[in-house]
Image (cartoon, rainbow, N blue to C red):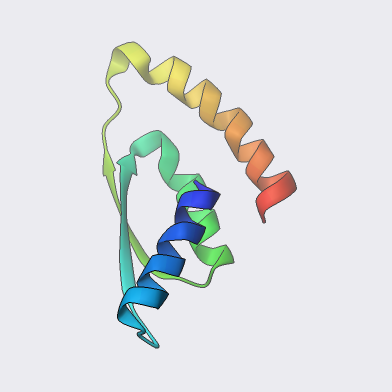
Length: 77
């Protein structure tokens, strides 16, 4: 997620050369907290659009996201 945001900022800056812009992140609901943390890190004016995680994969995705969040807090912020 962090790398995707870094690369996206680079592309936006190179292609459009705007001093200000608004971005929207579209992802699964379990992923939004980490996306918002990283958007704040980069001082992005951002909105989020979350899709619902299907029940049959929810436990697995939230568990995986828990560890990804710890990694983000320790290494990416």
